[in-house]
Image 1: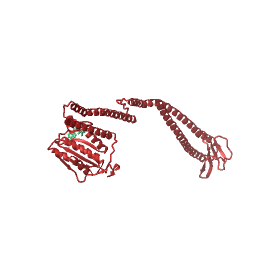
Image 2: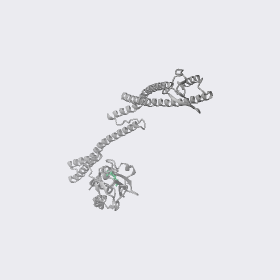
Image 3: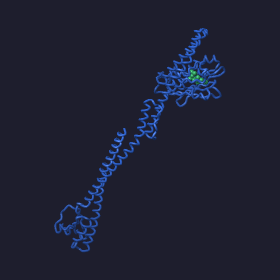
Image 4: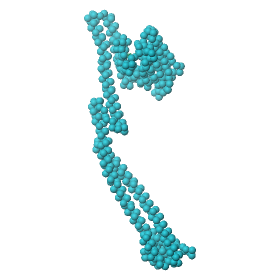
Length: 451
Ligand code: ADP
């Protein structure tokens, strides 16, 4: 893996450097040449202006071109150019290389006419080929190319070094992560990868750690579920066994024993039903038939289901709903079942003279329903756990109420699978408040059909 990373890094550096050097060569060299040309042109013009000025001065001082040859030769040496001075009729009077003297001049050179007040007195010619400048440009181009190639080579050497250093720095955490992933794959879910930084590798390590943590938690939940279920089944089974033994030994009347056995069988069957429902809900496999429903009707139905029982217990059950309670997008049966369970719980923990009050309000596309009772309440140390599987505050009471300890866990799963929340709040002076919040049909619209 390290090898491949090194090769890839080096290939990337190599490409970048080659492209950079080629780009520099492609742009810098022609630009340098162009600048040299502009510079040569400007200095040529300046030299020409100086020679022109000087020759005019010479002619006006002497009145003729006689004796000008040595000065023109000097100009040629001074400016490094071939300078020719021709008379008005085109005959050469002075030539810096002493080759054309006396000959008519008709070359296509750079020329400046020389004139005085009496009219034209000659023409100054300078060779169009700027020999020195061209040689200079060529030399500059060569040395620039050499420097660029040497620079590129040096950059490649540095890239090689960087590749080794960087690939080590990058591959170390990746290797560590791969090792940890292998250990997690072979079942060691206690492993955690060291988070190297806040960058992508850090994010990867954090995501990996969260995944391993979640897997470990899921494995623990699965183990606990099996252990808890076995534990929950053991009590009613032991009871049934006990009563059957007692019946065999004729220690108890069959009618009495059968009544108790029936109670335990009912508890077992409730337990199995609840477990199946919970397993489906936790796996997200519960089939929800969500439709736009009237929240008022739903709550009225839930209250009606426990009204008679509340009356029988001497508990006041009231329902106070605002006129404009928005519709919700829910599975009517399941959400009615949730409220039914919460109301039954409230009834199980209140006594004659207590009250259970159901109120509702809506804001920000959420509907909030509060089920408040004035019963025994839940001690603070138990509050964080009441939504946990098989959790009962008072285990001895649970048998009397027939609770499986799964009601609130299932309620939480169902509410959450509707995009809502359920939580506990202590009552003002005593008792409990269970708050259920659901999105309105408007908010859940995309997933809702009209009922
Ligand atoms: P169960 O089927 O035993 O009622 P739940 O999951 O519905 O299980 O509730 C868990 C526990 O929370 C109950 O055993 C009970 O101790 C406590 N509880 C639930 N509702 C109330 C309430 N309204 N007042 C007091 N305790 C409550």
